[in-house]
Length: 214
Image (cartoon, one colour):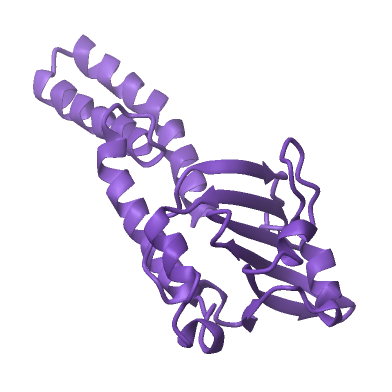
């Protein structure tokens, strides 16, 4: 979808000089109706990318509620409980290839209500989630209590990252009592090819979200 809008934005930008030239021509011909019509079209084509890419002042007022709702819906698919990610305390992302290959890790704070719920989540948390629509063709491994099962090491190794500037590492979270981990993955012929790996820490009030595609 992002590639589509990048392509669409490029097409729109290439149209700008064409419209500007036609506007100048209409102005020289003193054809005011045509000039005003082309001016309106140009203004609309300037506003569309600015609105979509959130560089237009006020565009966040429209997009933020939509993004928050999408975030809540995703977290319901992820855990069975509706909540928004809180403050982003850690982020690392590599550049993505044209097909989406790359690595990302985000660590968010969760609020007190969410943290309290996950200290004793419903049974469905362990038997039905994560099962996200985005990864419907991947294999899910439902939420489990820590400590981490070493038989799943190949999945964690594929998702692993060193956490610069933080006082803990991912391994600390996986072997700390009271936490949970889950993942969705896709196998290539040579082994794990894609993974979404998650760690929930109610006591630390953290949720870790990792994506690694190859």
